Image 1 (cartoon, rainbow, N blue to C red):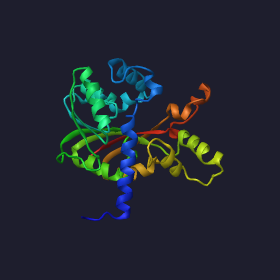
Image 2: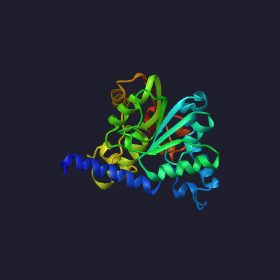
Image 3: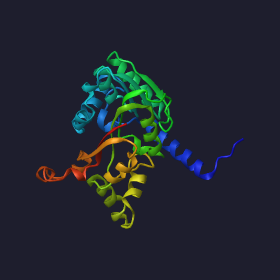
Image 4: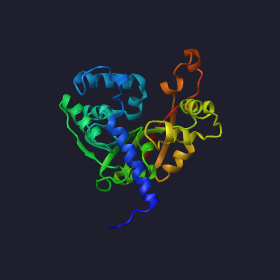
Length: 264
């Protein structure tokens, strides 16, 4: 039997922990969102959709779903299938992958409520099961930063995109108000002011191993792509509990989400 070295084992263990976290509760299906609605009913999915686009209205302006009618798109990390439904509604030829069985099953049920289907597979996106130059668009909203090796996912995304193909998505920003709040809670108030922002995000934001980036770091990650752009966006996580007047003065560069666009 081939031996696994300690570094490889750590990577396997981390990926398994990330998968276990999201198997228990696909993103967007928290009790705070769905309340006591019966799980995976139409009303349950409608509540998830309503909350998502109220909390993150900029998704539509970033994805521009309707502009990609008839195109072959891949979503990396389908979660509860809310954005995947928008791609289907827009008339795209839909493919989706997720690290979890829960994400695939939930998305399949979500689409079925509206009469749509998609080519869905449970896979680790660090190795995508598609031919080179297969997709017109690859989309991934808030997923890649949970991977053990985001650079491997981005290399795979670039590989499966057609020449001139488009990547659209979002990754977390480290120098954001949301992360500063996490740092105050988990570092400063616990008497550990030397603890780094990255370490706090890794251990205390969603699944273990979560990462957050600066715009220059993202430019480096996306260096093999063309026409890359990164736009920080303020979110509820940044502005929550702040006076409305103050929120209007905050610069977007302090935003927790960084919207991404890149061309192969």
